[in-house]
Image (tube, rainbow over all chains, first blue to last red; front, side):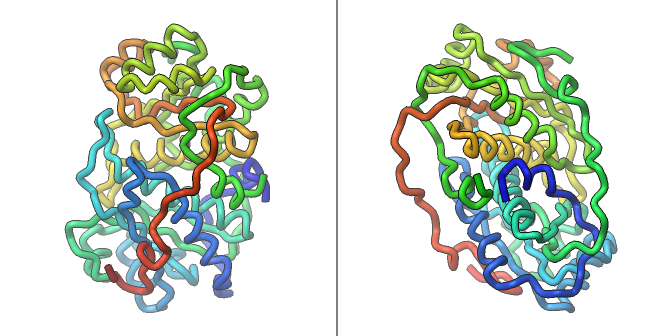
Length: 171
Length: 171
């Protein structure tokens, strides 16, 4: 699928069919994350791929009982290994880096007909404990992956003029 | 261009040809940002598109004298409007959101034959002052955009086994 088409089609999928994610598709999605750029090319990340139904149910519970998280046959926890690193501009490098890597995964998934949903509402300590992630690391997102069972709705976005300024700031 | 191909080809371009970025290409790149997802769909961002040679030279100076930044005919400053927002998981929403939006732009640019480079090493106050950005906002990245003048090198990335864990944490 073309890049712009994937960007247009990517959406937050909140209902999944039970069919498993084919191994080659999962491999491609993880490869998309692996190839992502990161500040100083640190690649300070790890992706925990959860397929166990019990653990997925626990992840859904820890994500404010968003049951669809457990419905997806795969949930990927994206973990930052250096959550204290800040770029010279003052922005947290780990959050941008993981943002890029997970975005790569969402677009790769879309291009393969799979759905995803960024989950940021979860219990950090609880997820770390469930997956055995040492507490010096930080889970940046949970990403359910599976075949969509819901119907796409049109995207709600601001108009271009509301988000673009030319040459200098305008608001 | 296919999504996976764009992910493979995207790289940090640090030399640019002088040809301008066609208006339709720039429009597509900004559209890619506009369609990006954000926490609670806040879209708390603005993209300042700089083409003025004088300002680009100043941006390069403020980016630790990385001269190639001024070489690119367009530099986009990606600005977060809500830099204090934190997700329930404890991760800064603004950094992830802008990470996603700028990643969308880099992949859209790649698919159009254009190069980009994530710049995080810059003087935050200086860039805000130069572009007239109010100080309650935060510039997350500078993104030069233009036709590449350098030669691609192979990506240096960790092996898959070094970044993926199955079911539970492994290191």
